[in-house]
Length: 160
Image (cartoon, rainbow, N blue to C red):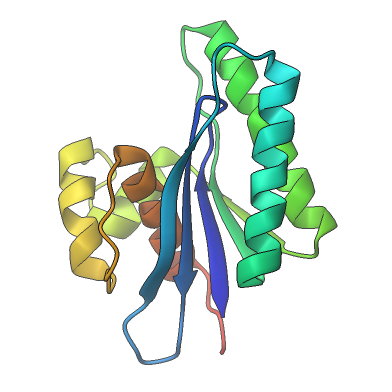
């Protein structure tokens, strides 16, 4: 089974493709931090995100999306943009037949570290210990996406 895992945003989108096989270590097949330019309008940025998600779904053929739930922030402009990006991502995945699972930041911290108030550094240090990574990850956004995917695999029971 392949899982598309996303740390949503409209400037930076952390993306990971994880392969899960029963009784084997999960494997990271692909990860990236997809970036859009602040110089283009939000609608074009959202379109670009949707196109990239569709491209990856067609290439890797995942059956499931794991995505982080939005949590409230004082910056309403950022929250709205991220919310719109999440909508585009969830629509693309649902439209292409993927099952969608959403997780809060505290659920992700519990699944990866065992502690719901873990620091970002604690989560980042645990990720490489929980998954086979032959790929070097270059950004926190990628590691966040991988952590979200690991959360999905911890909470949901998938048969391969």
